[in-house]
Image 1: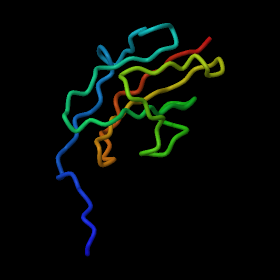
Image 2 (image 1 turned 120 degrees about the vertical axis):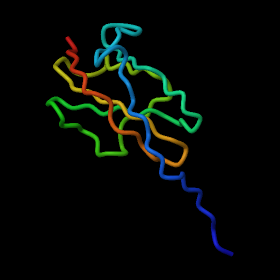
Image 3 (image 1 turned 45 degrees about the vertical axis):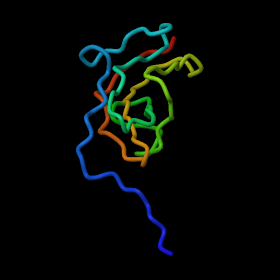
Amino acid sequence: MARVIPVRPSVPFPKATVAGTGTVSAGGGANTLAWDAVTDPSFDKYRVYFGTAPDTYNQNPGEGIVVATNSYDFSAFAPGTYYFRIAWADEFGNESPYSSEIQRTRS
């Protein structure tokens, strides 16, 4: 018997939107990113991508740090400047385009 694998129809994903106009809210502290929650019914998780240079991330596409809520605490990072992008994924693993890039400094 053939195995059925569910596939989401090819529908463009809305881009993850960082709170405000490309800025990040303080959230729970100075080292917390926060963004607008995704309301799409197929939402499953967010993925956080970061690096120490613009448009250069430590994670490959589809392998960002998985978070269930619309915030991320990076207080455990070493001091320095970091660049972040957020994406969201549906239950089938399809991922949205990245949000705008955000620069934050961990002191």
